[in-house]
Image 1 (cartoon, rainbow, N blue to C red):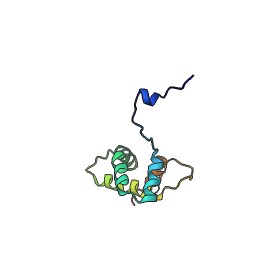
Image 2: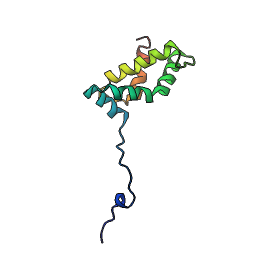
Image 3: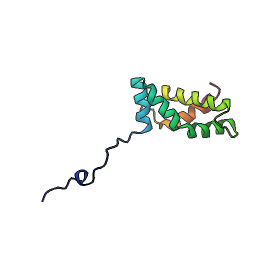
Image 4: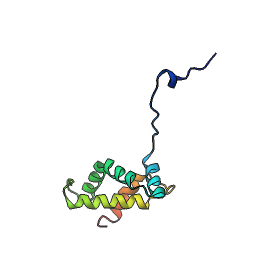
Length: 102
């Protein structure tokens, strides 16, 4: 019995699925500013949600508080360490809660 190669029959572009933790570690290791900017752009809804929660009011992208949230997320990218026991998004939220004014 021969095995059938499904990729030969149904060509599918192989897309590497990478976790956010992998992306953060790649940014740290390679100082990859393009990937950093993409990650920050992709997670703006998360940044807005956490910033709104910290400020106890609705925050939109035109408010100064949103800029503080962007800085906090960027700091979280720099501070995250693999194996510290938390997922990156939980860690990033804790960065805001610990020091929302930084």
